[in-house]
Image (cartoon, rainbow, N blue to C red; front, side, top):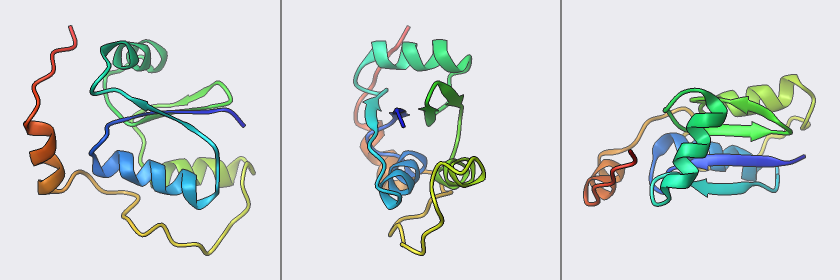
Length: 111
């Protein structure tokens, strides 16, 4: 399975996606959309919208998705088998105040 995950370095939603992919021991490309404007532009072009996270699994783009939704997609398409492993982080939650503070320290203009 080829997985490209368009994620923010510090984000509750992005961390939830990472946690699910790790829960199932899936190899994935973690693509930073905050510190590389080309990565962000690629995500927008492929997904047709500007919100993240976005995860591309074998050419199927899952746009503006939570870790919980990624897990549902993987299970419902029988790409993984169910497991009782825990993620250790919320898989369907936004950024904490601390994560927002980390992102606020850097101003990035994409376009």
